[in-house]
Length: 514
Image 1 (cartoon, helix red, strand yellow):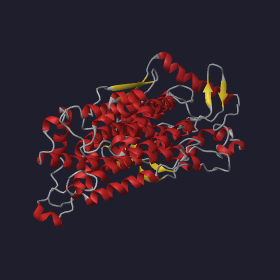
Image 2 (image 1 turned 90 degrees about the horizontal axis):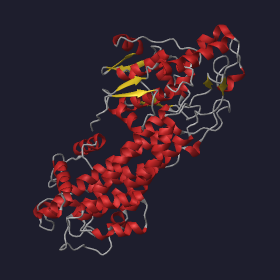
Image 3 (image 1 turned 45 degrees about the vertical axis):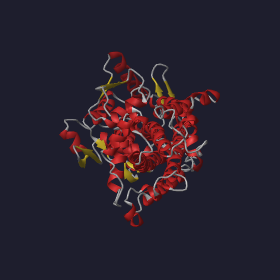
């Protein structure tokens, strides 16, 4: 997938989910921080007000006090400069797999968006260096586990704070190295964290928001792919195109459902007047496919609005209003909206996996596939007894579907009281977003299995003359030809894992226009 935008400016416009995805997937896209005097003056005003309060012995959470439940602990003025360093260090306890380069870029971009609003008390040097990490592709090694989603993504974001001060490891030019070394190689210089700057970096929702934005982009493509796969499954099963008649969807006018039906209908338009469906009413995984896919289509705009609001919010604590000369203590680090989106999204995507798994079960079973060979094996009759076609692939698809469905349990209901009961109600947003990405991966694997199945099934129908090429639209013919570059004809049994990996990679790269 190619993105035409060469740079994205932070600090003078709203940042979209598409902007985050562009930066995440295209390292060549440049992150630019607004250089206008008015904007830069806003950043300087925020830090200047904070400095003035410190000179006046003002009490500021996380600046002259300890963190969290330790808010009652006063920090002597002589130790205030060291406090941010301690916050960044004691949160260095993350575990689990490291975020991928794509995910890490998205995290950096989301945090940059939040900090450039001027209410976080961070310096120009900090936001410029954060943009510098993106532009030089210096990627902090961020562990995926250790956040409860309030007080924000403290532990994973501590690895971003550490990179900015030249501590811990990063990935740069394909190598893992100390952050200080990478910064030096790139001609950048680590910063010394000012009062509140570690808190501003860490006390926010950037990880859960970034991962959710990436999951939504994958879900959008999966929904479109599911309509194309459903079209091919319907053709292979000699299904009834009347199930997708526009008049049906005028009677129940959910827009996303109608869009899904229209996509399928467009793929079936060439079947012709001489086409006779095998059944008056197809089974639900074919007939009701728009109703399954359409829920995702209908919800994605609402999800996008919620995620983009979060991307463009200031979500650390406390906030600094230099105009009204106030410090505002709140809880914007709470990731409830992102948890809801991620929990809901993984439910809808897992339903796509379940839909496709059921379609595959129909295709491989001679009781339901209307004359196709058992397990879609293309073996010659004399060798049919030892060839098992896609039998194991269907088992694999069922396993991936079951795991996807298992991961739909809402993360938000598992709030745990933490940090001496100061964080006594938390969002679990980062866990929800990781679940959503995992469900996307599993569903992509199911889609890859079904792509092999529909390709083989349509090929068999064409070979035996039960289907003519002119009954396929140019779009579906092109799509099948593209699949044929990766998927072999399945006659004699052979391993399919390499084909599956290639197809899942193709899905992730959006190589097919749908």
